[in-house]
Length: 357
Image (tube, rainbow, N blue to C red):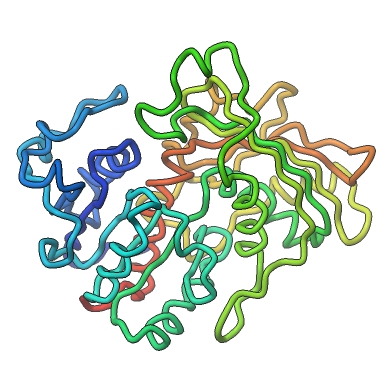
């Protein structure tokens, strides 16, 4: 068990009024290692009590501890917390996150802006915790004492969690991916009901390219200065479906040598991930759960596994074109977004890589 820090670390949330920002607040309000000290959002919200500035969504009530907190500007001059969680939209995240890193803050970002930069870690702690070593390269190259650590696109995270034990054991050569992504992934208010009810939208802007490139980076190998991307040929299809929470990813996988469904099943069943991620406050007992039921995973039944941090895999079977095919599903705004950033921050603190800001 990882020993907790001597005292809680103050943290801030940027983009606190949006859907992912609200998920951050739910996860951080009673966090054992972090004190949720500051909330920040756009200029139209800054200066107002949080309860007045936000349209609170979801089933859980707003934590009382944040209702009267005044929203601040997304400016490092107004935020003193050393760790900053960013739920900002990509349209504004780039300049803001760099400003915080230059000011010595560690930024845990959900935005796409820096994910594919050579010196920026794109991390799932159970899969590639060693990629955090890029922070030293980033700080030396960019001349700042802070840093930016990103988590991937939510669908990419679900895919990589299922693929990591297979790539580790057998080496993946080719991959076909088709996603069925929940509407909460589009934020709030998201997609008009008349567009999504009874419908499937076979297009999510920029999603397919992100899935293809991010999987390669996360399953890649860290060198002294960058990540050597995994040499996997990937074809991705991204679809929006009428599900509230839970991204489902169907995959066909081809390996460097022939692998049967039984061997793939055993690799997934036995996988526990990087030991450095175990025992962190947000770590589930099993980051990857294998279901033997023929009709699982299902968002309605499995999305809450591990408090939303477990990815469930099922239907591992032979594929007539590739070697095996399988289905993975996880909570897109927890494991796929805010929870992923919180887990990354816990790993940084536990391994002494959060800096001294």
